[in-house]
Amino acid sequence: MIESSGLTLYGIIGHPVGHSLSPVMHNASFEALGLHATMEVYDIKPESLKDALESFIKLGFGGINVTIPHKQTIIPFLDDIDEEAGIIGAVNTVRFRDGRTEGFNTDAHGFRQTLEPYRSSIEGSRFVVLGAGGAARAVTYVLLRFFRTAQIVIAARTASGSKTLVEHFKGFHGSRLAASTLDDPHLSRMVRDSEVIINATPVGMFPKTGEAVVEGTEFRDGQTVVDLIYRPLQTELLRRAKQHGARAVSGLEMFIHQGARAFEIWTGKGMDIDRVRILLTGMLEQETSRGEGRR
Ligand code: NAP
Image 1 (tube, protein in one colour):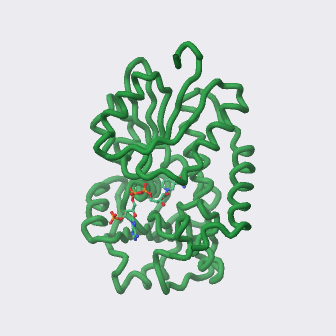
Image 2 (cartoon, helix red, strand yellow):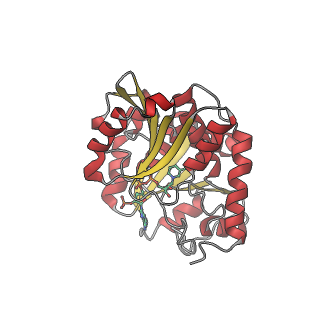
């Protein structure tokens, strides 16, 4: 039925996936290019991941985006993994082609594009990455491979979480990585001594927008604080960063660029990034002005 209608299906899978704006971004882009395709959200429990993949293949899906908690666990079920996704150890985009499944990591591309405008002021800096999940891996890969770094401190909820990430990148591009934890009494000082701080945890994300992953930390002029969260556009962490004179960078650019790269992998066509930015910024600003998420 799907084949005869000529409609190509795409999905975003996660558990839970309630607040994703990926369908808005991709459906608007399919329509703008006159592509007969659609993306929907699929809530897939971890134990159903393998069956779900088989169903997507049978149904003739073009591709899927993969989000929490499947980015690492999906890897053994895929036929091919591209080089970056293999190094990072996480997949956020799958293409179904000629009966095969191919995994990619477009978060790395999205994050690189986010940092590129600030390259001259952050090269050679000290970085703190908060979190040690799939996104933190993509962030660490980009920093090590594409930006000169004096040091990267990984601070996760557990010592084992940050140590695993540090071990994963041992020896990669002369990595200068140190493991810490979010409750380390020295973390405040390490944050203050760093030039770039990146939040790769979900703390502060809609609907719990009053939270910040590092409480009581004072940022300073000359720092760049990046929050991978894009909903809300201005997180509590970014609000505090700005208040102390730091540069605040939202996760929206990363979201748009990771989506654009996935779109290109699936369709072979470029997404109109400026148009998507206007669309998503408008939606997110409306959400903020309605006071949504202030819970
Ligand atoms: P993930 O693989 O599930 O990792 C999440 C990380 O955050 C883990 O280190 C986890 O620690 C930690 N964490 C979770 N809840 C926490 C809490 N309450 N306090 C402290 N740490 C906590 O997820 P991910 O894919 O890396 O995503 C992380 C964040 O980045 C999410 O907010 C996601 O929306 C965002 N993201 C944005 C983009 C974008 O395009 N802008 C792309 C990817 C991800 P444990 O290991 O201890 O659970």
